Each structure stands twice: as structure tokens, then as C-alpha cells.
Length: 420
Image (cartoon, rainbow, N blue to C red; front, top):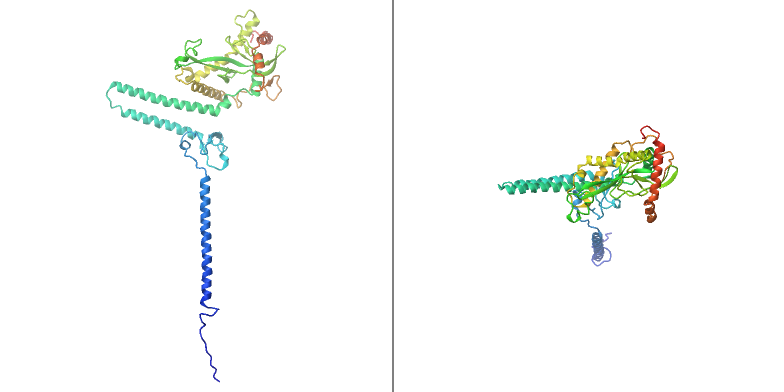
């Protein structure tokens, strides 16, 4: 029965399970790994190329140290910074950029902090110079000590002037549009109403000049700036109203177009009360030098009384700001003009603060909601300049208006005991 079972190991040459199959498998696996390595290397090279491309096109902002300290002169993007009002803290201003919404890096800084930084920097600069001067006081020579004292005074004076110029520029930049503006139609309605109540329909203020002595005027200009006073002066021409608000400064006063009636006659140009130095134009009404009748005396007395508005404005301006009362020690006319403009802005701020909620105090009996008998026509820049100049310099219109004002004044106030 005995069966013979034999078992032998498979040969290395057999098709299935042999060494040939293992070698083919290892070869495929090595090819796959090689392909993956090449793909990985290609991805790395692609990413590096993209990064280099982005870096090549990326804008590198130049360093701006003035953004970090003091008044920003230029934004990181290269544009000029602007001042805006904060909605989080009402009334507080800050420096920003016109392109602040493009998602890039831009300047942003509180305006009051900038001013304090500048003031502290000036103080530190002055103290450092004072320390250097004090360190040199070991000299016993009297002449040397006098030179050091003069040097210290000069340094302090220079620093104070720089601070003054920065301050005046900031005041004009921030508040000039509001407090040196031309009268709006609402302002003209109120001014015309007050002029009507004071016996001068169509009058919007009084105009005059103030001389500010220029101590350091260049020698070549002294004769040109010394007309009438013997000393070189800079002339401020201004228009003031009944509450001492100064409307126009330095550049004359354009006559607004309004429609009003005087003694039953229509007129179309508002006018200003002046003294005798102004010509006989349709927009200037002077007093009568030698009145010969009661009508003329009444007109002269009231005209000179109302015209004192601009004189009082000049007096208050000089009393509040000694810098415009004393002779100017500056050389630059532009800086002198900025000082005067800043003082006028601050003056108008005080006038506004001393009144009620509106710009000027509420005039009794005046209601803007009611229709007024004055028609205000704002001047258009496209108007005919030659025709406008001809109408302003019309001497016959000046004489007719002045005669009608004399008659209107006598009719309205002549029956009163004091004629006022």
C-alpha cells in the first residue's frame, strides 16, 4: 500500500514566485519613486519662480522717517498726506492718505500728537544748544561772554520764529476755508437786513485799511512801501460787519450782485461805507466833508458812526494780538501775510465763540425762513469782466445812490429828536 510522496522546493527559474518577478516589481517601484521625486523638484522650482516673480513686481516702500516723527511730509506710497476728521472721536483730526482704501500701507497719525512732537523737538533742540553755550562759559573774556549771550538769544529767537511759522501755516490750512470765506447768500441776507435797519439799504459792511510797520523791509523796497507814512508798511485792507467779523482781507472786496431799492429806485450792486481815500465808485459810499444842510449833516453823522465797525475791528485785532500791533521784524512778505491771516482767523473764531450757536448772533426780527425783499445773485466766474468793472466804476450811479441814501435817511430818521 505504501505510496511514495515526494516534495521539492520550487526552482528559481519557474515563472511564478521566482526572482524574476521580484526584480520587475522593484524596477517599477523605483521608476515611480523617481517620477515622484522629479514632480516634487518641479513643484519646488515652480514655487521659487513664483516667489521671485512676486518679489520682482512688489513695490518696496522707501523709508520715511518724517512719518514716524513730526509732521508727515509724504506718505509711504509717495502721495501727499491729508488731514481728515475722526468719526470715532468727533472734532479730532488726523493725518491720512488719499489712497488709504487701496489696501496698502499708508500714513496715519493724530494731528495733535504731531504738534506735540514738534514742540518737544524744538524744546530739546533749544536745550541742547543752551547746554553747548553753557559749556563754553568758562571763558573769562568779557567780549566772549557777550558773544555767547547774543548767540543764545539768537538761537531762542530763531526757534520761536520757526514754531510761529509752523503754527500759522497749520491754522490757515485747517481753518482758512471756514473763517476766511466769502459771504454766503444767507450771510448776505442777514447783512442786508442789518444795513436796512441802520438806514443804509444795500450796505454789506465797511471797508478801510490798516498799516502794519515793516521794520526789516529791504532797502530797495522802502520807497515803494513808504507811501504816506514815512516808514515802510504793509497795508491790510479789510471789510468788517456790525459784530466785527472780518470778511475780506488783503485782496480787496468784490461787490456782490444784489437787488434792492433806495428811495423807490432799484440798484443791483451792494456797497461799502468808506472814508475819503476811496474813489467815487458805485460800490463805495463816503461821508460828506462839509455838510451844508440838516439832511447832509444827518447822513454824515450816521455814515461815520456806522463806518466805525471796521475801525473797531482793527482796534480789537491789534489789542488781541500784539504781533500785528508792533513793527514786524521778518523779511519775507509771505510769512508776514500768513501771520496776519492766522490772527484774523483766530479773531473770527473768538467772534463766533462769543455769539450764539450760529456764526453771528441772532438778529431780533430777522427770520431766514421768511422771504426777504433782497435778491442775492452770486457772481459767476464766466461773467463779463469788462462790463462788471464798468458798472463798479460808474460815477453817475454813485451820485444817484448817495442822493437816494440821503433822502432815505432823512425820511426815516429826520423826524426823530436826536435824528438817530
